[in-house]
Image 1 (cartoon, rainbow, N blue to C red):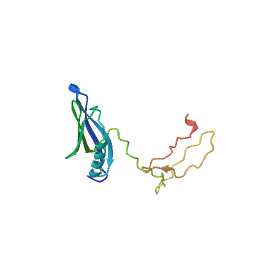
Image 2: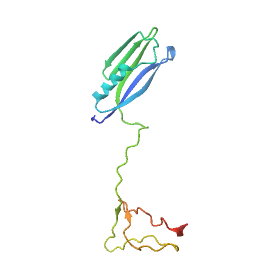
Image 3: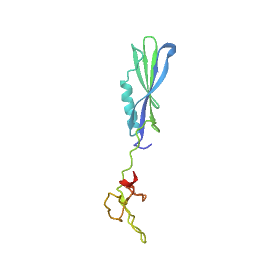
Image 4: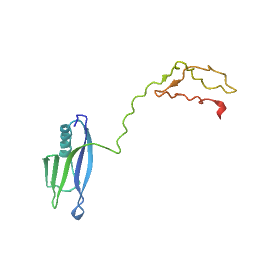
Length: 156
């Protein structure tokens, strides 16, 4: 696990009361860096965490476990638990897209030996005629940056 790893800080907490008690997981945030940095942030979050239940806490205990922390809060009638873990983020369907590589400047393609220079766009009946030949700008794959038909009035 490299220092540039992204870690998710997760809390699994008890929701509801009585027969309707269930566990819900939420991602509290992310940490870029080492596992130790992620665990330090997770501990900070666990210490300040205030669960929804119980409404009137009597006792609160924070325990370090092998993979995170366990917060046990005793209420007047029931005990509620929140488990804090750290996990390496491997995939995220809503992550922002990766930055595009920097665009390269278009290059001018010179005619090869024995090849005539590509002709520029033909002038329409109302357009003055420009130079009939000359290098056109092409991208790195040799495709013209400006298509020959662009700007021709005789095509409409």
